[in-house]
Length: 354
Image (cartoon, rainbow, N blue to C red; front, side):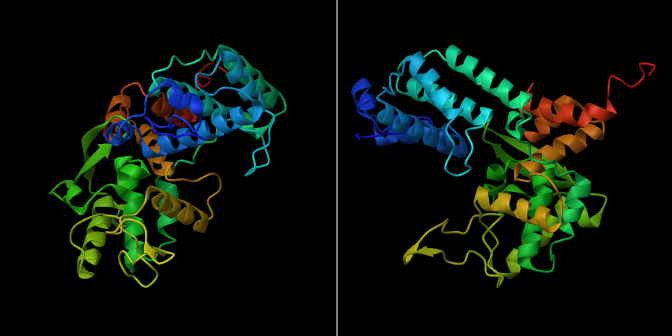
């Protein structure tokens, strides 16, 4: 395999076709392009591209430039080949992402992407086949919304007399109140969440829209679920432990130590100042939901979805909800959340005379 390099997300591939198709970029250019894409997307596309090039190598196809026929063959293979981790073929949404990764790799390498019309016909047939068989894979997986009732149950599982309990409570409540993605939440520093007479003015960098939002978080009416007081309690506890600047959400061990050293084979790993990773923040949500006995799929995205659902039920305007949470105007993701919350409250069957 020849030199590979990442552009935007997928890395232009571990194959000779890539290096022959376009000259390698400098390290600075690669870094600049990578910075324009969310880490989670870049990792996912990079893995998808690596799997595609490996399949091409095994089957005698050329990954870049790929032909439309190659993409059709690959998508067909994904619908029938069990994945090692799950023992099942790819889900339709995973296949859609793989196709997007292939097109992105071509665009990043300044090569015309292959037509994916045929591949999408195969995908439609696959989705229809799963639906007729009532296979759960036919439906997209959605994180459960962490609406206030669920949040209260999750908070009840925490020992808020401890530093780690205060951290987790602040993470749950501020994550909900700012509708932040976990990657945006863990990027916050103590200086980014100043408390004012009205509440917190959180400066959240919204990765998807590439801009900061000054998100106003007012005091809650209930002491146990007030995000402002939860952040204040965390800030005070961290100050007592000697931490008054730097990340808002940090690693804490079971002994209450902030940012304990992490070593692998004797070599320090992890953020040197102890900033929590997005994955670790998501695990806070997952653990609290499991401890509370909540059913369904829970993830870091549950906080963001829970805010949208609760705000809609409270009668707030779609545009205001979107701009508070950093959604682009007309976001299809946000509209999907709101449609789910409106199924009963604004049901078109009601009032029809049945």
